[in-house]
Length: 558
Image (tube, rainbow, N blue to C red):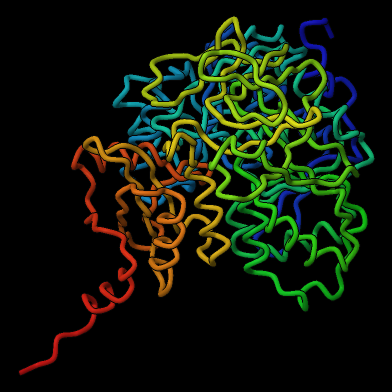
């Protein structure tokens, strides 16, 4: 193949018949697709897209779950000279109206020339496409039926991927990623992790999210090793099936956010692991959200007796704008947690944060002050990234309050952190904080303390800001339980000084999150300040527990 295709489509040249992807079925088994079979499907998809009028640089939207069809749709779009864009299918959202609003924004931003979707999402996507004046979507099976494969791939498009951000600060933003940036990031991850075809891997991450797509699926396919693929809901139903696969297949690599580790800890008992071994695991990449050191310790305590090496836990940092990976801990090194210089930040609420490793080759990380000056080791400021894998920029209107930006100076992440001996320590979003006595306190730090008090992730979000001129902290609960209000008051009153404290109680699952599960703090805050929040906001006091129980108690009959 020509140089323009080098690295992304090379695997189509001589695809393996022995290695490939294994997809979890509903009967606790696995459906195998060799790379030879997947390559043939990719070239059929490319031919079908060309026959539908898709041309060089056109955008192809993929509304598909993790499947052979997704692999064929993604690489088939590239082989047709088009730009793939993965849009979450409806399963990622709980309400139809919320999904329609979100997906309409994504489609309006990406403006796809063609859309491929699953059978179960066809009607919803057809409605959205019609409302935007886009071409009617086609199911994958219908698209490729009876089509002969393309003889050879077209030149790669200049933009090899449109990736959407999580949208934690508002609507997701479309990020334009060049073929060079994608190739560079995949090569950097391969070098960091020591990827090789003989190392099997497993994932349950959604393929519309950058960690599941770039960090796992593309890495696996381009490298050519066996990949064991579960759906996110497979993992939620049975995290033990996921662990059993690691043990049975001798998996070397996997990846997940901190939430995944915490979920395993809640659902899996030591007795469940009696027959399992995890000696094979070299890389458990942990990213996409702040990493909790207690979760790391507890996870190793659970799996360590069955062979999991502490050095296999690899905290990492990245973003869609960086084509994903920025820093990562080296396999075998062993994670550590540190605090910034004394007196620099109350943001850590008295606790150290987990290091996310060192920059991958070709990337530079600096910490800048509010005035744009580079800060020395141990000082907290904004994380700024430069390097060859930075995205080209954003597409469409952003519709976001995100503090992240991309320009000639690199990627200003909008995240706060510090460096120590070359390693990056990430604290939280700059826009999700409040100055207390001249020092920043971050929502993610307070949420971490609440998790340590027994409130699970996804069940509480902390909002910080200035409301009507008054510093304010709000605890938003999703399905509150006894003791949670009291814990929230103790934590927020200790670290927010004289700020006004409030709470909002929603039904379980009511805390608004992104398609990747992050709390949409600034979206909730904006609605609350504008008086558009449906739920009642009331003071969070030391007597909150007792008062709430009194309110909820039945009234005695006369």
